Length: 179
Image 1: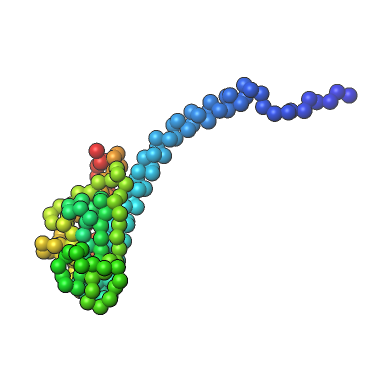
Image 2: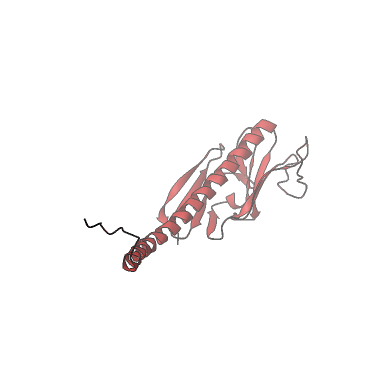
């Protein structure tokens, strides 16, 4: 009786063919994976911004005081933002502390600079910041608000946040890809 030869593993040729197929599949998948990561960072940025706005509005209503939201750099929301109670209604970070007490301004939220490949654009006076009144109404630093803030990342569809003066806002997807 002849015993069958027991398979002891892969041959070098079989291993090289398998590695070549795996390399081809990875080369095809990697660019779309990078784009997917950029798209999700952009979506997360828009959702974080909306969440911060909702926090500011609810805190203004709950505390019965004006809550102000300002970009770290005037006109550029992609560099981060600050949200604080604004008892003296001066829309300034100069007297804002870390401890929240009655009649003292304090930080409610802070966002650091976003990913370097995300930019922002706002129309009207939305780039200067806005304030939520104790009634839930939203005003820009210069007055009433009706406008958009757009976040953009290379080769992704932009995310546009539309804000109305009643304090409501929504996120939409842009029609064209960002440059």
